[in-house]
Length: 174
Picture (tube, rainbow, N blue to C red):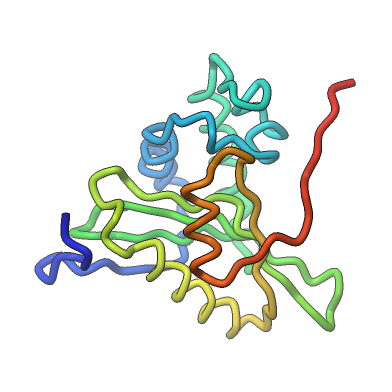
């Protein structure tokens, strides 16, 4: 597999505020069915039932989650970044900006995924770089993200991009 995007179909990154992107984003999200991906956001929004177990109606709940995010993506606080190649969305990142501390606004990357057909081509790194530049122009000074406890491949990827562990997210059923 090539380590660079195809020169005939370069990848373009953009903010998307269009709910018509739901199906493309949902397809990418559902194509990644490894339960190691499950983190607190999948549990909070019902996309997963428990640690390591997807919800039986994952597709329906994921569609509701994505539609909710996209319908709120009209400001610079909740945004969907898309990676498009040849007119097709091949990857995305869901980003939320918080300005609760005006001295240090931060962005949380809730999801970052690519279609299986383009993984391993350096697009995740390129998207991180693009997100960093975009967020800097919005006054953001830090990125945060969280990842499923067993998603070791992603953890290594994040560490290569200078992310470091700052906390552990824990859950208790009531």
